[in-house]
Every structure is written in C-alpha cells, then in structure tokens.
Length: 357
Image (cartoon, rainbow, N blue to C red):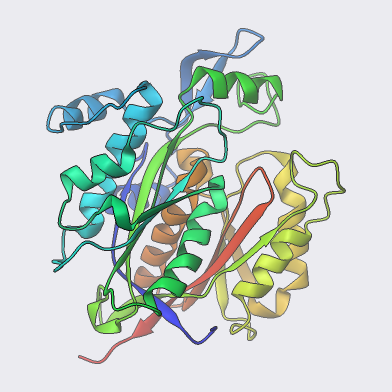
C-alpha cells in the first residue's frame, strides 16, 4: 500500500489572506498575518482575535451565486458554503470530466447545531454539476484531521474503481455564537489578555486527486505526489480523562513515514495553533521519528498567518506544502499533519516527482 501514490491534478483555496492558492501562499511566505480584533467579546469583555475573510469579499462573491439556504442558515453556514464553492471552482477549473467525481468533505467535529449545515454538497453540485453528484459524496466529521482521513479514503476508492479523479475538500468557520461561547468557557480563545488561546480562522481548501500521473498538474517538469497517509487516535486527547502522551501523533507519523526513513523530509507543516496543549505531541512524534527528518528540518505553522482553520486545515496545509516543493529546489518531500481536538490524528508525506517531457 505504501507504494501507491495519488497525484494533485489541481488545488483550490480561499482564506483570510486571499481568494486563491497563489495569493494565500504568497501571503504566508511573506509572513503576513490576518489576525485582528473582532466584534465578538469573551467573558471578560475583551474582543476575540480572529483571522476572517473580509466581508466585502463575501458580498462580492455572493452577488454571483444562487445558494440554497436550506432549513437553517446563519453567517457560519453562508461562509462555509461560499468558500467551498470558490475553492472547488479553482480546483476543478483547469480540467474536464466525462462524469462527476467522488467527493469527500472534511467537516467540523463540533456538533453544536441541532441540525446539519445548510446543504453544502447540494450547493456544490448546483454550481459544478459536471463534477459533483451528491450520491457520490461523503462527509467526515472529525475536524482538523478529517482532510487526511478523506485522502486515506481516496486511496482506497481510486485504486478500486475506474474513476479518474476524486475531490477532497474542507471548508470551516468558527462564526457561531454557540461554538465561540463553548470555546470561551474553556478559555481557548485568543485575546489581548489571553496567553494560551488560538485565533479562529476560516477557509476552504480543495484538492483534485488522481492516480494517473499523466493527469497531474505539471510545473517545471515536476508533479506533486501524495503518499498513503497515517491516521491514528490519541487516547489522551483534549477532552479525554486519559493521560496525554502524544502516542496518537507518533503512530500517525510512523504510518505516513514508512517509506521515508532516510532523512528526506525537509519541512513539517503543522496544525499548531498557539495553544500549549499541542506542543508535547509534536515533540514526541518528531523525536521518535527523527531518522526520517533532515537535521535542519523546519516546523511550519501557517496558522500564525490565517488562524485555526478547523476542518479546512489539512487540504490548506497540503496546498501550501505542495507549492513550496515546486518552488524550492533543495526540498523533495514535506510532512503535513493535523490534530483534532478529539482523538483523530493524521499525517501525510507530500513529495515532488520529476516527469518526462
């Protein structure tokens, strides 16, 4: 299984830093931060720091869309749906397909609504009928790690069927009063008076994947390959009473690095969001798997620029890692990982492969 690879045919992204992959990656590389105080206040009356997509961008995009709002609709639903449509259109815009491709959507692990989101997948199908069929779509509700779980599903699906493409996506936002109140009660939100909180962000990331290297996006004679991911569970997760030892991420690293044991990994792209809780597991996983990392391996945490992206974390981090590989002559492979608040942990090796003309 470790010899199988999936290739990126294209990517799509919208975040607080830009409305496509290029603008977001450029802003991250420049160290630009979208953090800012918002109208939301914590229990101490301090404004909560977030990294939000500017409202005028949503207004401009929404003017061109006809969105089915479903039975329950609020600001969070609108942002998640709109961002998903934008990122999907970028990811699929360069290719043609004879039939819809299977879609797996990463979703929030927080079931704070009494109803599901407004019909995100139905809206995607309405705006990209040639690509999306709700009957071929699935959702995974495990938060930050869900995107890597989705890629694991894509490996199994694409190698067992005749489909040429599969779409993996995540779209998430924290703009819901009930969710923000829950996080505030746990003192997890970043503000001027908090020294151990995270900045909620919002984004959507989509990957168009294929098992056929000839269908991959070629840049300077190279394509981006995804290796089979490692997915595991942390028994001592944030909401567990079990001891927190970091074993879950270690096992996810081991699963992802099985064919990369020769210090080939240049960078680790992490879902670290500024909370102290997450540092221990990374230290454990990195130390226990050091034979896979270059001595000068760098840990990248773009959350410092665009905030915590929840279920959109993995596809966005993979997109950024992929672009870095294509622009960096000294790097051949990066490791991307995402850790959910609950048990799930996921890691994947992203590498560049030369192709003949």
